Image 1 (tube, each protein chain N blue to C red):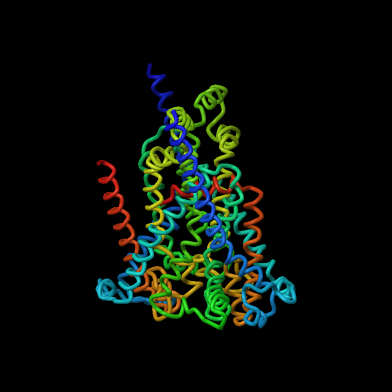
Image 2: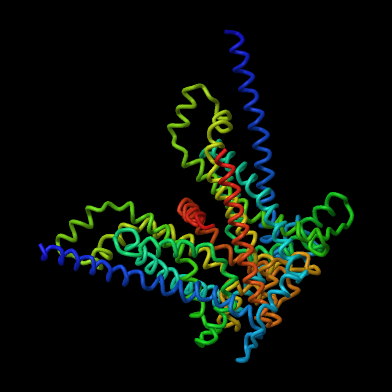
Amino acid sequence: MEQKEVDYRKEKMKSRIAWVVAFILALMWSVVALLPFFFMVMNSFRKQFDMLSQGVFHLPDPWNFQNYVEIVSKGFFGYFLRSVIVVAVCLVLMLIIASFAAYPLSRMQFKGRGLIYAGIVAMMSIPMHVTLIPIFKMTTDMGLYDTLQALIGPYVTFALPMAVFILTAFMMTIPREIEESAEIDGCNKFRIFFSMILPLSKSGLSTLAIYNGVSMWNEFAFANTLIQSAANKTLPLALGQFKGEHSLDIPIILSVLVLSVLPMIILFIIFQDKLVKGMMAGSVKG
Amino acid sequence: MTNKSSLAKRREKNTMIAAVVFLFPAVFLIIVYMLYPVIDTFVISGYSWNGISADRTFIGLKNWITLIRDPSFWAAFGHNVVVMIFSILIQIPIGMLLATFLDAGGKKFNIFKILWFLPYLMSSVAIGFLFTYALATNGGIFSSLATLISGHKVSVDLLGKNPQALFAVIGVMAWQFTPFYMVYFIAGYGNIDTSVYEAAVIDGATRGQYLRHIAIPLLGPIFKTACTMSLIGSLKYFDLIWSMTGGGPAGGTELMATYMYKLSFQQFNMGYGSCVAAGMFILITLIALVFQKIFVVKEDY
């Protein structure tokens, strides 16, 4: 009996020590994760030459808001707006086309179904860089080079395979009886899709919207290849643009960084669980 | 009787028509923007072409022979492999530790989850820009830290010299992607049936014993997927390098994708650029297949 009591205490002691060690490590990792953000935010409020003279660990003195005024007056919201438009258009198109494809793949019997499904899923592993030169060539031939529309095709298409994969799995879980009773009532496939299947897939669609929204918002390689003039550039390209114009004024560039990550952080705080879930959906890629 | 079978046939035909209509947009886009470009990349790799002029000369396998003997390409591939190995060795174990901590701590540590996730919200390009300055010799984080500790001015040069530059890049990637694997493993812990935990507690297991002997072994398949993702991701890495080091200094952080991009869109050597892209595609596919095979064999034991 006494022996057991001692064991129990030992175990409790051990677990308490483990917790303290773990907690210290957790704090250390927090410093690693946050220090670059601290560097970014603090320096964005400094004047150009204060950054070097004051060092990272000195609070800005004086606090300088001129950087933010400057980038907003130099068209920051133009980049921002273009990114919003591209992401919105591409997301809507992508979700419609993907659910269109997922519907027959999950709920109809027809010849070649397995083959088409396997083909689409296999496309998930194609690296975009392999397609870059031909897509550049195609875009030029179509006369779309240096327009926002040029981004729609690649953005929608490269999100499709994963979206079809996830939506097909999702639609398979919708009970069959719903569809059968509608069919007896004389509804055709298109009515069934729009009035039943699509509304019932809402949670799958919102997850996909979040994941793909984030990756389209951040997309760089296609945008950098297909768009040239500043008047058509999206937010990820704005960074390079501002750097070109203010190559030595680091605080100004850091304030561009702050403003471009801010919407993501706000969204993350509001939709925390949804966002994490959405990003997990992306993990089937690969 | 004949009536019935013709009805079934009509139904089958209707289903077929509906399927074709529903599938058409997706299949069309995938053919135009994925399948055709991949094939075209292989086709262009047989030409000498500057990407702009109409005339391109067919040169057969010449580009491929150059590629096989190109030390810059193989150096870039080597960097990709180093990045791949360290990504798997750093990001996945730390991500798993963080997830374990959060899972064991429950709701009260939610603030850590939010803070730790923040790096993943930044785009790779933004991170590249940020760390160009954060790792700079003048006013960078490490230089400032060293100055603060030693009391006199010290400059730490992480991006200007080889091989530190590549390891600095690997460190930045770890900063960016560890949160992703953390969340991934949190989801993994969440998927384990609560009845498993309850049964373990009834049998007298502590939280630590449950983690060590039950939860972590159950994460096996998730672990495999995480490694595969990290592997493929590291082999096609581009944005961060492009905005942070541009492949430098002296090619010390050049990766396959940045090498291909420079050849094609800066030097306008699109024939050879396509060849590099095609080579990259082949190497990624091969490594992924070999990895899948090794892991499956291991799981059988």
